[in-house]
Image (spheres, rainbow, N blue to C red):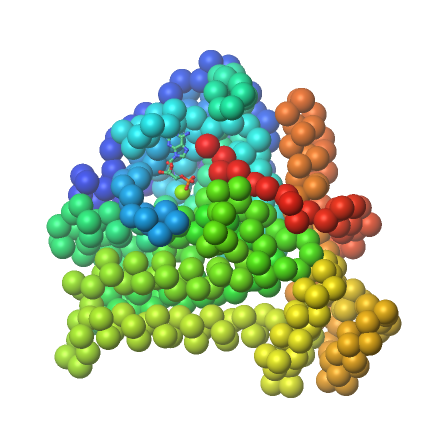
Length: 465
Ligand code: AMP
Ligand code: MG
């Protein structure tokens, strides 16, 4: 049980990264450590959780070769050169069962890509990422994970003085759509090909020897994103900043900034304070997925060719496929939520329910759960809802199936905020209890199933910079 780093990313052409050491922290202190994830990675939790220096960036673990990755991205529709402005990749940990995971420190100091930022992170946004990413993992949604958060002992200056912290993020890789955009805009066509080959080798080795492997790369990424975004819709998760630099080719949810789960069902829900136009609203997420995949396809265009179609036609065909796949994933997931896997649970039955939920401002999570628990009227004072419920019940829903697809416990904003407020004052017990509950999302819970007293419509999130 120990660090077991490999460094394939650093063998890419130089334009893709810069060697960069994390900055030494004045007084590292472990705040939270993920024992289960450590074991999964092949690390001995009892040994390494007493080494906050490693997770603060002050000491490098054996075999680490830190680097910051270059990437670009469309942010709210505008193309920008970016890169890890406050993160360093320590290496790729090879697990005991031979799997490969990036181990990255986030908030460990400036890098050549910091632009005007200071390279640091504050405690609460890092804890927020820890809580929500681990909740997503327990819900079965593909995601990067969180191994540790340490306080650095360094003040971080934002609107006020905040406690500095570093999050250790674990990901299948940090190759983003934005990495391809970067290669396409600032590298040579050969760089794009090298990155594509690297991504295929790392994530889709099964297509490595296919003659149309780059088309298949686009198809694989589109399929993973279709599945991912459908699962966000199923659990009521709003990413909040679906810029192309925050879209991973591995299909994991990445970059937990202004994300949040909705309470009352409202397809227009936006939590992020900067998303004034609602570009990344709940209802827009599938469309933005397609938009981002178009940017991915554009980067790959020089590699997309066969004897029949032009590169543009190939790309368009793959985006059409994305929509087909998305609709399938969405429908299948909604069917499982309604306990009916057959075609009798059709789109109109689902849409009718969602419309009623929106009209009556019903809690998204609890409405589905209530449906799976009772045959009594979920909304007794609405004849239309009773009518819908009768129609649905006539199709003989399987309530055991429903219970497996309708969580009780999601990271509700008011619970997350409560945990963060306590953590800010040095009390981490509230967060530990919350995390414990979130690790079992399908268990009944009086406390954590409670929606907020007042509606959370005005709840706002901020990019954690
Ligand atoms: P994000 O909103 O986390 O996706 O970040 C967008 C870009 O801003 C990425 O290139 C980050 O590395 C960069 N960034 C965010 N916060 C900071 C910071 N405090 N210092 C330097 N760069 C930052
Ligand atoms: Mg980002």
